[in-house]
Length: 140
Image (cartoon, rainbow, N blue to C red; front, side, top):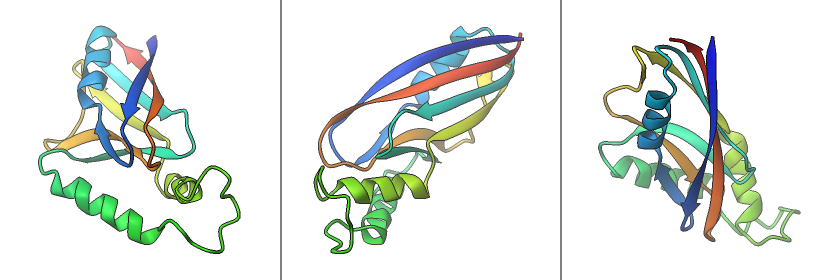
């Protein structure tokens, strides 16, 4: 069994989706693993990871709009407000989504569907530098 690990830094410019599919494909191609699993884990509590369609940007627009309506800023019952009005809604959005995703590897390639991409879903309004740890485990 072989393994490799790498940390990606993804700069964000506020709320939205930041695709890093190409970086995952590159990481897998350099790991010399034919069959296995690559895991992506985001090291933050106010953003998350999603696998979503990457062919039509309207998908990201609609998802972003859905989450803004589901957990809007300015809810008067929130207690954690010291980091701004977007902070606790960001934590709730992250709790509703995921911080880790596993992607199978077959024939040395991550097994994404035809229209799938992997995204960092930024829930905060201000720019951040997010870290995503990639870990691969498998056989040559």
